[in-house]
Length: 309
Image (tube, rainbow, N blue to C red):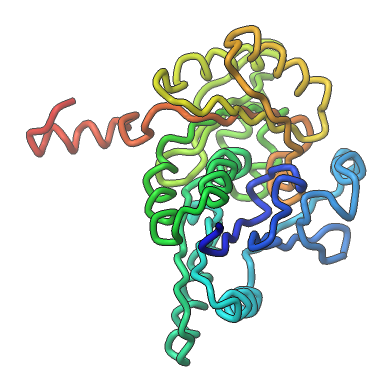
């Protein structure tokens, strides 16, 4: 018995068929491309190859946050069901959509909306967000309450690990996701940048590799290093931006490295794809607590407070 509604957004990049269930709502992020306005429907209305081929030919799609009217309509619909609801949101570190959701819900509550709706900032994006959503759906189907599901997600998000590679950093630069100096240096050195999402939900460059084969090997090594040894969830998401052969090869490498892996291959949707460009590969999995992977600033702060390193 499902005790609540569950709302996820298209930035989770999961296969569409995994999101088809009564009481499960998909919030579609908007994007602009070649003068037209579209919604990210996880490639239900267009093929991934068509989208990424357009980018290869020079198209530069742009994205925006979900507008408040869209949230207002969603929350009214959720309230009409008479059941509590949980929304697992794309990272506030990469989009203003979570803040728009908070404002929309606050406005409706001031107007007298009587509904139990929990908003969760996952601090995740793309298949990292997908890892959390995938397990949240499992917990939801088992009958977890809205309050418990929201509490679980707020803690579990820190145990989602990921790393991804891009063909180059120029697309991320154009979208304002990384500094121009970093993009220029990466291009000049002819390397494949490796990135991840930090505990605050922002992009971080984690390394470089020369060539796709070495970059794919680095993704597998990162998985083996950071995967949780005592975790009972073996699902690993493999995301790709129109490079299915490489995704299949990456799947084979992961299974060879760890036979317990249950791989799920996902297309990187148009909103995330607008920022990473064609050729991106990613691995998302349950692993170490990101809060323990301290930055230098965190370590200095702990020393000042007399804490451990």
